[in-house]
Image (cartoon, rainbow, N blue to C red; front, side, top):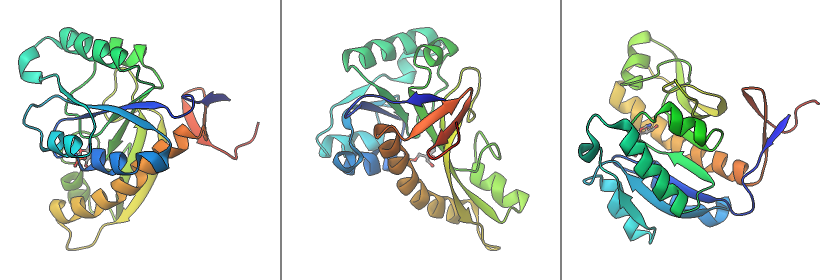
Length: 212
Ligand code: GRF
């Protein structure tokens, strides 16, 4: 078992592209979670989440996708240098609408987490709630996982939270119910990581108590 530990009061950067409600849930709880939110980075200059971060007194930066069209390496190099300057211990993706290069993900292996609004490995990618409603599943939810090279909405799962799907749910009604679960799950996982409660065995993640 390899402990996953980021030091006392780990320095967290949150990466967003839009609304920023998960980011806000984390920022509001940061003292309770035992982390320092050193900054919020947006890939979109018009992301509503930027104003929320500023209102909460968190430094913000924009590295705009539109300024790096077709040049993933240049984008990720800019991101790497910013995160290095911020001395980030943990990178939290919260509605960040970009695929990170394998080189970036490998460099920060086991230091990047993401939330996806389905019970992965079910319904990765776009429109997970529509996928869930169309599939007729009775339970959906959300997943926090480590980001792994070469995979989108996949990678070692840290924790999941379930949400019932009602017969009359639409993608929109399900999304709003799952979002409430996201706002509970993501901060609690971050608190657990900050407390050193997680371990990995190979590519799988466990929280205590687990044998060996
Ligand atoms: C969330 O549903 C998250 O799971 C997904 O994108 C959405 C972002 O919402 N990856 P917000 O920006 O955190 O409000």
